[in-house]
Image 1 (cartoon, rainbow, N blue to C red):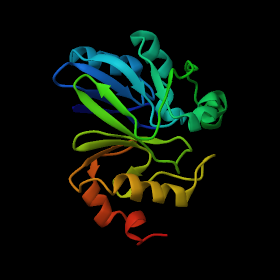
Image 2 (tube, rainbow, N blue to C red; image 1 turned 90 degrees about the horizontal axis):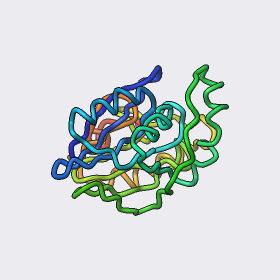
Image 3 (tube, rainbow, N blue to C red; image 1 turned 30 degrees about the vertical axis):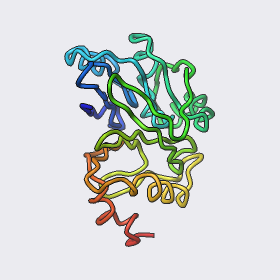
Image 4 (tube, one colour; image 1 turned 90 degrees about the vertical axis):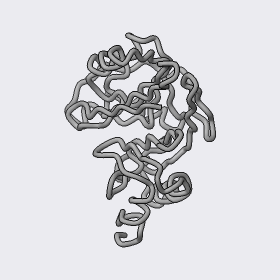
Length: 210
């Protein structure tokens, strides 16, 4: 797959286009804002968006869902454990002083171990709670889109509703650090990294912090 990342919105969350290079079929992951820009890029790549995949339901990752869904007609995927958070978009927006268009209800539920077919490519769903109850990572061939689970040199915050530090660390160790070291991690904020780099140098994962 071809993975294109775009920092969007005031919180600069990374949205991604995951494009099957054989067929042009694609998924839009975490359209947090600037939906028109994301859709224009997809059109320029001749990529057909057939799914909207949400790693979790924090406002900076779902702010552009309504516009993207309206333009593409693509089904929205979300883990059911984040349904309450998703429904609390008005409260989230108020807390951050933001305004977004309320997203439509999710069409489909992620399940642990589910395989999503995007053209000739596949993405495996791994439930990675801790940052939020229904956070998931999407595992492809040589890469993973990891939302706010882990970052280059850091991990997702756990002080928001539904967060839990121990749960997040367990999820990272069990669901991500078991991948090959050269697996590229595409996080929800900041630059890409690799499993090996985070295993060796991330202070939250090496035990140097906490």
